[in-house]
Image 1 (tube, rainbow, N blue to C red):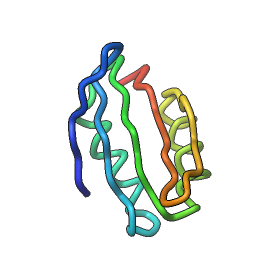
Image 2: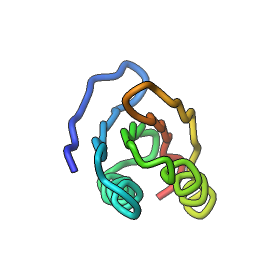
Image 3: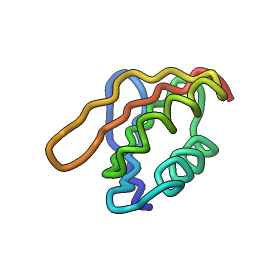
Image 4: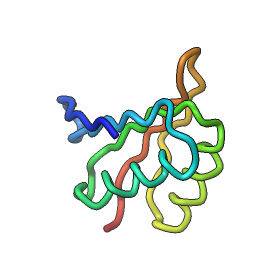
Length: 86
């Protein structure tokens, strides 16, 4: 997992690069980033495994956090999650 902090005007954003990792890697990487996040932070998860979409939806429902977007790009799936609860 490659985690980088990016500057955002609205909220701190953590980029989690899980490209090339298969299930359960991307969701595990998201959970690790979540443990370090604060309410209001944004986590941007990059993955190539299509299973990340239902996994992130289930994770967000379970943790009651918000999926801002899931975007299929040519080289990756970008999921943006806003942390609403800890």
